[in-house]
Image 1 (cartoon, rainbow, N blue to C red):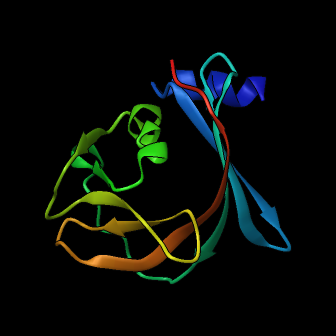
Image 2: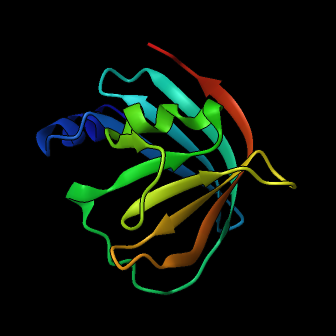
Length: 126
């Protein structure tokens, strides 16, 4: 963990996301500060596809309909906005899980890849 945190700082990243898997599929994402403090853990399921992402990382934003996950804006150091047309992460409400995380590329197309948030285990608000 220490080596990962040091590498993140070396490349000017201040938080770290670790994705755990279960039977070869992503099952949990844990976000840590550069001091190794746990910021957020979410249990997930994913819908995968092999499509190209086409994001402009420097312009990426977050649109969130799920207040408990607004913290992703701070963790990922992305602007939290009410509305966006392109190049954003959409955290939407879901009937069968806590939330769905969708990705919309720089052309305004929603990707088939999505993260289904089943449970929020830890949220630290600084």
